Image (cartoon, rainbow over all chains, first blue to last red; front, side, top):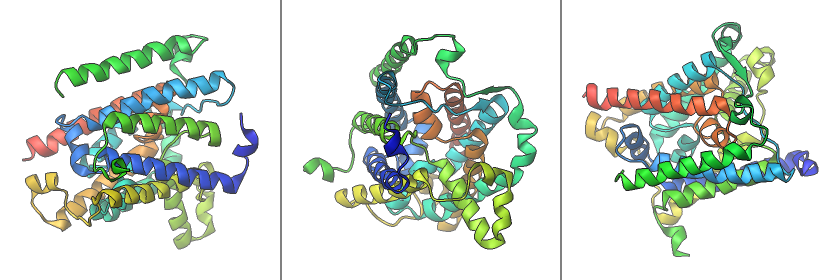
Length: 186
Length: 172
């Protein structure tokens, strides 16, 4: 691993900015910084969002696991619990549909001139994050603890020691899903 | 260089591009691409400006310090990158009410602003509750085969599809 590079604080901030610029560029060119495209996905009339997410996940999955096998990267799976992930995920989903952007694409929408994204979306997300920070001590001792499973990965959950045994079939299954989507006429 | 001026790229090209970008995020920065933590940090920074340093004692801000970090810079980068992309294709324009919204709920900017604000609050709350968003869980988490992320992204879409159907097919 490039630990020396990872420790260079200012250079890392520049790298974050550069990766963000490329990410924002791609999101805009993909059309997902547009409210209509995101709502179209949630109304199941436009599958652009799913196409982008799945092809990004497949590509990322193969490359990141290869880097890991070469000793050049380590995984950072997020911890989870039923109370946090399921409940939070459903609240997020409701917000996703009401706002019509997500935290990444709302920033991209601002970049292409969407004022509802800036004054509604960004301001709202900041307020919502603040509310969560205020509620956190109470939630942390109650609902977020329900059904905790920690920083678990699928290979660990299924007791597979070699991650590739799952990476390859999952990548293939997701590719098949994209192929089916394309051929079903979506 | 015509492709840089194109308004839309193939979703597969974009997805593969984002996937490759995630390799570099892991390799060069030891970080998965994500966005929602940056909003939590910003919210803490704003609260600190108003209420002073005691904000730093909040349990949540001990965990996610309200400072500019790699991911915060990434979100700033997203605004810049999308601006450049939109400028190149001529897609940049100031807009209050998206057309799909206007078709169902009319052209009022105030109504759209208010609903977007409510949606943003729900999203900010939900993203921190679930510990990530469509990028952190949806792309970076699923590619790591994280159990939390697969579960989260399924719930994002269940909640999202149900709510969108309610708004556009039941309410109207």
